[in-house]
Image (cartoon, rainbow, N blue to C red):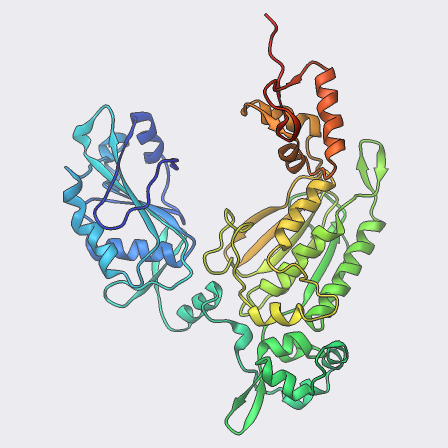
Length: 479
């Protein structure tokens, strides 16, 4: 349950939220999951630490303390809360003082409006953290499904890689000589365009793409991905792009619908360029059934490019899997190995920035025609380009070891419908807001849409707003 007046609290300044029995029952009907846990108020401090740290180390979650998990108790019988806020102090302090580093949490109490005798439930909202959190006994836990499990050794290292605390791109590569990298075609091409003019070895040293190991230099994963002629033959992990065209709109891709399959290997810049060419060729060759019979699907090339570039530069190269691009009759799916890094979530992905592979991002941006020209704006550009073509926005979902982005070939509502829907919940709308909602750049084009709605007696100008402040509202009755 998410409330607008939830307050972040530190220490003992807790807030009590009054909720109805219906709201309480809605909470009790939920099942424990990857993002939710119920605990009795008798839970030990160490037990609660484990749950909170596990959520912070994974993908966030909510813990309700004061709800029994006894199979014999049902409904409100499970609600056995704290007598008062002070009774929960010890549990609260164990989270604040004994989990290291301090976890990103918000706390509040829930109290039933109609039955205060049930006591207070402590709700702890745990945000996804960019750090690894340990309990007071030095153990690391992670939430997986409805379980909180301990991890150690390699699993902790993998979690740090997933979060971007350490980067797999910095790992040294055994069995591949720096001399081979110095002779690569991609490095020669890049340095021929790079300014200032640099010797290959000196460039690689300065950019930390090769590092000293004993008496000799060794290439890093990032160096191999950027400049080796065939990274797939060098790295122990899969690092190619696989593209498949399925002549169907079904949710599940089946072998009988497969029409084309391509594998793109090589340095990252080459993978981006070749993959885009193949995707465009496939789209241009397609014929799908539309309102006017068979027609060619239209996708914004820039949106496809930005999603593909994001996948290749921000993927988790510690995971042995390729970037997968599936082209269906009604959508394009791009599957990117790894989870969202650091503190990034689906909710804040358009506003926050975090580079899992900062060296790859930086070096690609040094190309004369960088694929990541506007660093950090890729997804925002993709969303904007989809709006401009009047298509629904990208859909992003998180899976156990992958991020899935779908570009649907489904039209948005008309600008007129979009404006009317907005005004159904807002008092008024101005030209700037309408253009942003509708993906329309021209101020005059937006005015024409307002005028059409006015002539249809659906909207009217707000009398008190003139000039630059002009805005429109739903037409009011003259009675």
